Length: 143
Image 1 (cartoon, helix red, strand yellow):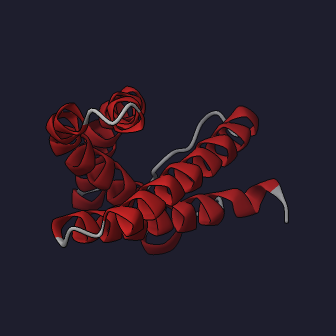
Image 2: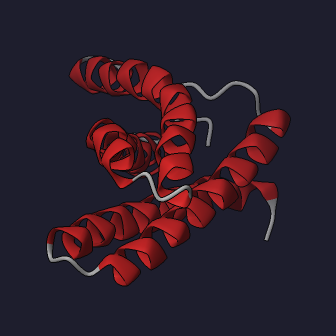
């Protein structure tokens, strides 16, 4: 594997995190707390691996340009400019959600999780969309 493989790895990790976030939500709605805990821990680990790979890639490739003009660029920038601040916000939100659960303060955990899961889900899904737009659907002519 090379650094040029990391965008696809990152998209895969985001997609995997999305699956675990959704599964965790389904499990807690059904009262399956242990399955919920396993899914959410896995989503956190997968997201941490993603963040590590993302930082490694962008340390070596600090600028990524979307070169396709017109409506695809407008759509890409709209997604990107909502994705970036929410991606920054999701890290403290996840921490603020996990700590009360760890301390068995489940009412507080539930209150914060109501904000965390949609933001985390949005960030994971839009991360995949950003990858698809940059590398699959509208790749740069420069490669």
